Image (cartoon, rainbow over all chains, first blue to last red):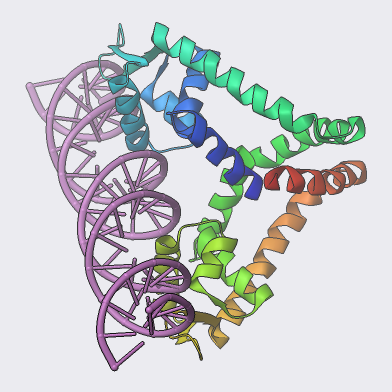
Length: 126
Length: 126
DNA sequence: GTCCTTTATTTAGCGTCGCTAATGAGTTAT
DNA sequence: ATAACTCATTAGCGACGCTAAATAAAGGAC
């Protein structure tokens, strides 16, 4: 929990986007265009919460809403060009910070973290 | 981040107290009575935020405010008897949940997590 | 003793992010 | 065509973080 708070603060301090917003951008970047409902499901959030997040990203010009071709109830969310830059820049900064931190560890410690990652990943899903 | 969110949700679902409130109770349990300012410093939060948290805990009857003996500006926060029960019960549930999860891992995986814990702890502080 | 600064907490008010309940709009089944 | 369902949105609440300004008490200068 402490580590999560630390990382969140680190991000908040450097980026003008919240960890939440970045997570949505990242998901869209990996997944391609998605509907509000799909995004909500992936981020484990209720649809109204995702509507608000998408509205905010839309206001910032990072995301586009279009209505689905065959089903006009659903709105499809996709990244703008600006978003790709923001994502790349954010990733760059995150990696720089992480590299800096990880360089202070011994190789054995880094290996331990590498081993632990998939286990923690699994715990987070069950 | 995902794991942190998962754990937070797990706690929220079972306890009627937020992770935040529980953290303050835990700190008081470990440290003994503390002032608002000290609590804010330990939880890495601004004093106004801690004032609100303490007010809420006070309303729930889990915490007591008393004025300091020699300096009447500071308020000393201490646990009530009810709080000790709540803390013990919460810990019991947390451990039950964790044991259940950890039993699904191999001994080697558990050892990896044991090794990783202090490293992550260190990363969260720097 | 009075004035001034510093310190501890609180109040007021803003922003984010989660939720549920209810509404609007579009689709599908009968 | 009408009923039932689904997706997104709106409205409104609660928890938590923050800053700036107010209040209250200490402590020092003179």
